Each structure stands twice: as structure tokens, then as C-alpha cells.
Image (cartoon, chains in turn red, brown):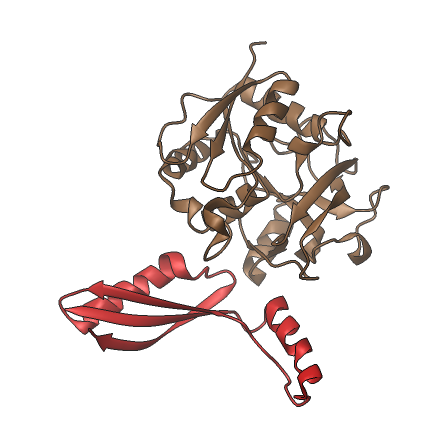
Length: 84
Length: 235
């Protein structure tokens, strides 16, 4: 069975996010002066063959832990599991 | 003293591998080219992971290079006490590999920075600074976009308690403060070592600072220390 999971990787909350700050600083010029914070992260879609959704999710978690996110600076969330 | 053999790893996207080899030869060592895909260190006495943008810096700087076949050998060599120095992208790779604490993120000011800086040496207890005294200052260039060193509170406490900082960004006279910190690194950290002192990572580029015809020579004592450690052999 083929499964696709989406992994969202973001900088830890306490850590300064210069990219997010740069995006936020552009918004007032576009007329949005009420935005208080922008955080930029990564979206990684992983498609894999596995025997069950649980098995697939466990593997994607391992992939995220080992490679997709650096635990020193980042956290991750696995948002969606879908078959096919 | 026989000339030590210093291996320099080339990853896809490495830029400074040739400069590192040339600096080794300029300082009296023998440069040995190592290839990322070949898990063989060819019996070298020390390893340099050079600067550049390995694997395009995709995902995170150094995140993919850290799993290159040659890195298994580099990690085993480092754990045996062999001298390993990571410069710029090489520093990022060593942090990703867990051989040094912390991580390197986007510069505080967002810009890629390419200029000369001053470093204050913090310890002689590393393969890169054995021939220097704490408090000495050196002129070397930096050129990076992701050079802001950060760490977890636990890592930071351990780094400072165990004296793992090898060099900090400073004024020409060795004053360390935010005005002389180019990238926002925690504690103005420019170079770090492991507990044993045989693994060192730094964002500045000593390999661009050994030839007086093309710039400052602050890299000379750093390479001299590395070559001496390499010649002495793995303890």
C-alpha cells in the first residue's frame, strides 16, 4: 500500500527566525499592519510503500527524527496520512 | 619530522577543498584528496571537511553530507582521537553529525557576509590552536550565510563549563562584544572543539589566510598546529 505523509518542520518557538522576520517586515508596506509574527518552516511530503498506515507513520517519524528535523533547533509535526 | 598527510573531503558542492589542499601544502604538509562516496581515508593523519555548499545546502546545511559514505570513516577516525577540522560547511557537517554540540542557523542580519574578522583564541587545548595562547588574536576571513551558532541551554552550559569554545569573534585587541559579532552567534562563538580537543569546527576560513600575497595570514598558526598534531599521530 502506498501512503503519503506531510511533515511540517519549524524552528523551535524560542529561536529567532530571521526569514519569518523578513517576511513580516514586508507586510506593512502591503497594507497589513496588524500582523504580529510570521514564522517560516519547511513542508516535506514523503510517499512510501508500507504494510499499514501505522507502519508507514512510524517510519516517517523515524525519517523526520533522523534527517528532516534537527532536534537542536527544530520540531516537527506529521499532519496528514493518506493512502494512494 | 615527516610531512603529515592531511585528507580533504570533497562533497558534491564543496568549494574550498582546493584552497584547503593548497594551504596544507603551503604550510609543509601533504594534501590528500578524499571523495565523499568512498569510505576510505587512505591512512591520512588528519581530515579536513572543507567549506562550500554540500548537496546544495538542501534541507539544512550539512544535513545530507553528514550521511555520506566517507563520514562513517571520519566519525570512527574522530572517535579514535584522530584530528578532524571542519571549516564553514565542514563545521555545519560536524554539528549535524553530533561530533560537535549545537547547530548553525541563518545569520542574525539575514545577509551573506564576506569579509575579514578578528578572532580571539580561547584555548590551546585543540588540534587547531595548540601553538597559540589564549587571548591571542588572529585576522581571517568569513564568508557564510548560515553561521549563527546556537545550542540548547544544556549544551550551552556544558560548552562554557568545559571550555569547549576555541575562538570567539572579537576586536583587533581581543574585546568580545556584540559590536564585533558578525552573525549573532551565541557567546560570539566562532570555533568549537569536542571534549578531547581532536575535533574542531569553525566558521572562519583559515585556508584563505596562509599566503601573504593574497590576504591576511591568521590561518598560518592554525594550520601549523593542525600539521603538528597530525605529525604526532593519533594518541
